[in-house]
Amino acid sequence: MLLSNMNREWWKEAVVYQIYPRSFQDSNGDGIGDLRGIINRLDYIESLGIDVVWLNPIYKSPNHDNGYDISDYRDIMSEFGDMADFDELLKGMHERGIKVVMDLVVNHCSSEHYWFQQAIQSRDNPYYDYFHWWPAENGTPPERWSFFAPDASAWRFNEATNSYYLHYFAVEQPDLNWENPKVRAEIYDMMHFWFKKGIDGFRMDVITFISKHDGYPVFEGVHGEAMIDVYAQGPRLHEYLHEMNREVLQHYDIMTVAEGPGTHINNIHDLVDETRQELNMNYHFEHVELGLNARKMVNSDHRDLVKYKKILCDWAVEFDHAGWGTTWHTNHDFPRQVSWFGDDSDEHREASSKLLSTMLLTMRGTPYYYMGDEIGMTNARFESIEDYNDLMTINWYKLTEQEGGDTQALLDSHKLSGRDNARTPIQWDSSTNAGFTQGKPWLKVTPNYPTINVANQENDPKSPLNYFRSLTALRKNHLSLIYGAFKVYLLEDPNIFSYTRTLDDETLLILLNYSSDNQTVCLDSELLSSDVKLNNYDDLVVASDHYQLKPWQAVIIKLA
Ligand code: TEU
Ligand code: CA
Image (tube, rainbow, N blue to C red; front, side):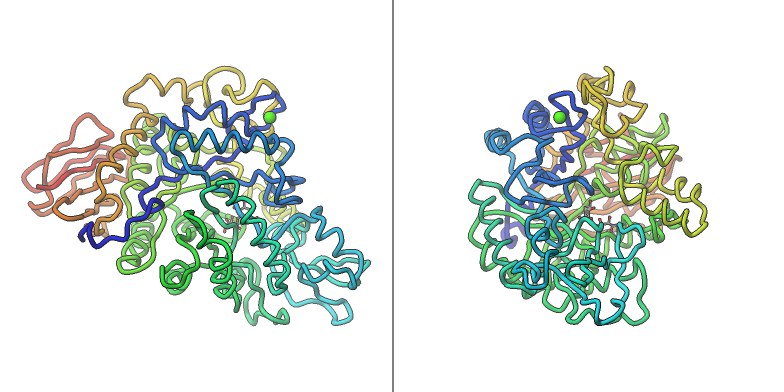
């Protein structure tokens, strides 16, 4: 591939760093991270060499789902601060050359939003049509599965209107009715409000769900969680996104990324190809859901490297001619990368966390990197349901209990897969509560903070933190890692992930040993070189027909 043929864009060259504000840094001792806390850590954020920060929702919210239930889209959650703090934060980021992407949560709002409070009064209320309803005189509504409802049903009866409203997520998260042009106009107007403040883009929460099937038909033969793929097939999804692009997005130099449950290779081009004029990027869930059954129960595919590689490689080459992809291992909804994909034992934690970061920053697509992974933070592994805050784990626990199921098995799986694993406070130092708060943290700090923390790693040139900084720097100096052609080797090898990235006259080989054992990697002579650009060990054994890799060794090698 030739750079001169590439359609260069800043968001293709960026590394996105995700901040979950609730858990980043508390500044006033109430145990909840806040905007002032982020402002106080701006120099740290800049030191990482990242380009964009994605903030999870910071809007006014009663926090049934930690900000994903928004009661006022133009105001800041009181626990996080106020609009003056936001303006200062945005300015501070921009002064450091960092762009800011906000979460756009418009599939649903909060049941405390003015629109919903009006809507539930009567069918004549002008806001009634802002939501989706099933009139009770039509009988029981057809099955719709809810992620978070205590009874798993996405319909909830409302007495005053004698109708059921739709909520794909919690009862407190009613779905907005995009079929109503007034709703779309309100949303576009709100997006302009934030773009005029100077934000640099949106990560769009479950944006693939916004178009509902007319008349709420029965989804024949599809039940429970399997409905996710059907939810993503709403008939007017692309019409709405194209309209949003025309009305809002195309007027600014910004980036957009869909959170895309239900996206697959067979439908992705409709969403992200340039000619479609919809969104820039999407993230799918295929590799992070590998090994997960319903209710995030873990199955044996969890450690199947060959399946994992095949998913990632298929997506990497899918954008050869059009569109652009993303890479990620976790976020606030998934376990810590080192605990799920690596080996978080004392022996291998640092090497494996460096390896996983290497994959994310050298694979094709814009990396979305989750806060805390740069120091190799691990899963919290809560023992008791009492320790959980997340309504997902709590509701599935209750559901399992009601069904007379195995609640211990659910807890055991969620120690590995639960969302709260990645939501524990950032481990800044070895002082009380890891330096996150002077008060009582809203979610327990992971007990390994005296060992795993930023302060310890700052002064250690070989720490995961400093390795991550080298990676972001290296990526900036090698456009082949961004625009280069992707080619995989040894696809069927159950331990090794190896691939090249080639642009103009440069080829980089990335060798990753996803195992806690030594591995011999036999490759053709043109793939053997000792010109090492980055290595998570001090040395690399290159023989006449193979490389010898140590446990979780990751190397980036320039080929002659
Ligand atoms: O998550 C949407 C969502 O349901 C998936 O990420 C889901 O967790 C995954 O498919 C399960 O394997 C978004 C937000 O990221 C999440 O925090 C919110 O709770 C949810 O939307 C509702 O707004
Ligand atoms: Ca606080």
